[in-house]
Image 1 (cartoon, one colour):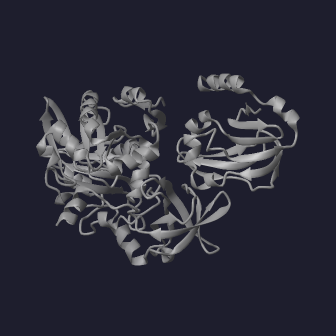
Image 2: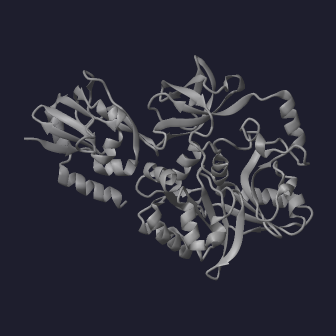
Image 3: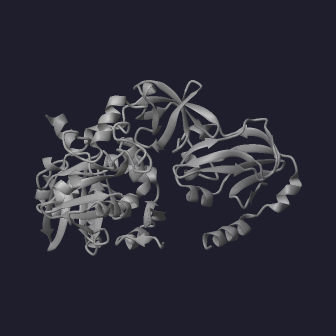
Length: 370
Length: 127
């Protein structure tokens, strides 16, 4: 299949973005340097085209009850204007996808991974025996992520104070300059930031406005490479790496997004998993010397193979090589020494907290102030 | 007087009498992106032309390094191990990798000069 272009494709070409095919979308992996870009987000601000993400609208009064059955987190706890991280789980408690659910006045907006959008849509449709309307709005919507310390200044200048005052994991839908936008205080970087949903055609207009306002605030164009580095630094999972249909939320350290008090199709299985105990666990680790680890590299404790790397990168903000892995549960202790095999050589690493950097999302900023 | 020769796998060799300093070209570093890791041979290693003498790794991928000329390694840029970004910043100066004693000068004839390498890269960039 021919890869698709986002509505911002020409902007990326103008800025000399290095274009790759990511899940069927042509997007910049970096402009000049992904290390520079990932650093800019933690020191000033970065702008990302995330229009590849899938948007599914589940409509009408039955939407909450319908989605409750297929998800692990409790959607009924949301009031309009709030959003939530959630997981689509199958009956075996395998992860079909991870997603953000936006509680709108009438509908639920599910923002899913580009690589899983068609699968999720087919799965929901197949299980939709009660005639819930599900609209795939992905080709009508664009998504711009503005992330970093100075993002709120830019949002205030472009969209106004209402948007700047948004709380973490909250959103506002409004007309600005005669155009509909949905802006949420959220992101995939561990920094304060916003995600801006626009119509397909308006994305260029808002991109230019944000870039122009951002000049005074150190705004940097960021590609998918920086997005990946930043999410690893923040300890966030990525589908196809830390989670897939073979992983359950507990071993993925996503138990906080599982609410067993509600009814859903994976519930029985999750109770069993809890009862039986976990075999393996997702951990974060810091390499003790220079060595870039990648998905699939074997992890050892002494001479015993105990797991595999799921993601790895060089962290320009820590100036260290970091990664995540699944390892046998008994070895998953913070401070424990492990080693990773890179091209036939073993390199030492130490297990750490997931969040390699200090999270500076709005929620954490207000905690610090309190 | 020194001359610089180039390989199709984008290494350069700055030849001065019977020694050559080896590195990768500006074109190669731009293709690789941010370089974060380098592995080099030890001083004293003898290697054949076109054999792998090391590995360079960017945030995107790892690439093998091929020796432009047969020879014995007489010097290694140890500072590069902790500063691999120099390969991006100064590929033909501070980003040099190893110095060898040339074993077989005839091999020089098979390498490209700067003009032919530039043509070669222009062609590669447009295919």
